[in-house]
Image (cartoon, rainbow, N blue to C red; front, side, top):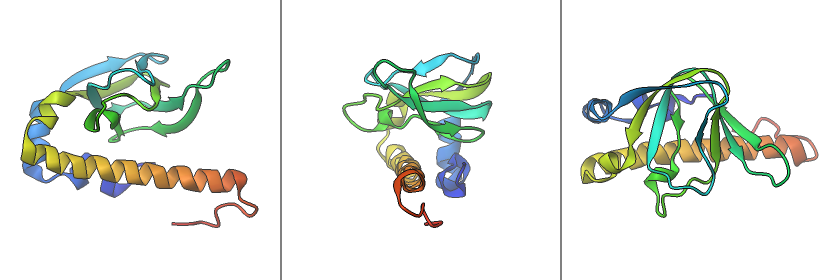
Length: 149
């Protein structure tokens, strides 16, 4: 579920969106392609143009557990912005995906641009943590989430 405040267009001022898009290149992934693996080096990120990407968590002896699905306009990956730059989850294309890909170092090295991007990434992380909390309440609380916002 894309939140209006977490999309690049809403979260970044026009000058930074333009700067970010100058650093973008288009990529495509076939369904079933792993974008990244939990515990590996996080050195890039994506914004989904079309298709769906699943964020998942390694479960020993089983298939990875999907914790969230991301679609059009959503940021895939935030671990590249926070040391030690290691993925905390894995990601897989659930369908054919077209996305904009960005090199993390190019974003982190410009202080003012990096700060604006950090605010955007922070909003994404906060929104996803909130969504995870609601899902956990729905699963484990005696009366579900009760529609917490």
